[in-house]
Length: 504
Image: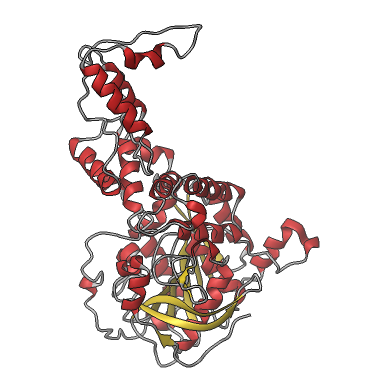
């Protein structure tokens, strides 16, 4: 159960929150408010917790021109950063006609209640003690913020991926009288076993990092290796096989790409295995190939001692360092000696690897491991039918819930999406009565909903012209910001799920 407020919420000191949660500083000019109380789906009541948001434009006289934009997994409240080409005068997200609001989901590290928040009872960050927050919990918390802003109804709620889950929950929780229209991109009625499995694999990457320490790690020494690996596997689900093949194939990374990737690695550790570093002996070269891409993250000198031993003994021509190799098995003895010159091993370092390493190490500078765990578990809980239909209804219950969504709905799917498949979008459109299905033909997989800006803009504008005719035909209002400078001076995306492969 949530409370609904009509008066303004208490604004929190953003600068103070930045001291407690350093990742909050990555979001420019957002507002953070304190919600007095909310009962979560679990039955737990949380009090005096923060929700971060950004707005563009202003409410009209009827307070019914609100456009709610819901962010994806690692996005923030800054729509201008990750969906910037859709935000501006006469675009899909038009601040001269709509009051645009994007609220940060709980569990995210960018200002809302999360594992990085301070637990007043302990004076420490919540960390692994952060309570489970579901998509529905987000919607209830966000409704309180909208009420405090004076919003009487939502003209349209829009979101892709996790944001699409929130958009669907908005329509299911609050009827057509409050949420008048829906746009959902690359999402689902319930999180699939496929997606749940990917989330689990990514969490296990974090758990396997020795620095994870059951979630009680220091922010000065977090489990960046595990988080980086989780991000790498996630990136593979966001794209398609053909997308990677067309861009990377089996090409060797350029010198610039290698330097870019290694610079990111060096930011995380002074010790790393560099495939381009010259080696003098076969042993050194073999170790270099075997451990290429490995960045030591913990206080173990095993690998460095082994390297130092081989480097020292090899330089003097000693064969002692080869003993462990030549005696691995009593059935077959192999002797390795000689210098690297004249040895030409097959290629083992490829552009695709370099790209993933770069993105993995870049990601750990803007996200937190406990937050990643919390928000992927939020995804796993997503099921529109949960507690809305009787157990006797079985799997058919999800169809009944969708049939009860009466709002005009635009469902956008991506043919090459292997994470939230196009068939899942067809399922939504089949059972939501007043819906239209549009297909994006793109090789970029799931990330196409953050890349195919021109087509998505056209689809949303067309939908709003039909279903929000009074607002779209209203006179534009000055909203205080030059639309040409809407990104607050940002040159590149910080929070977008999509890292444009063509720029690599």
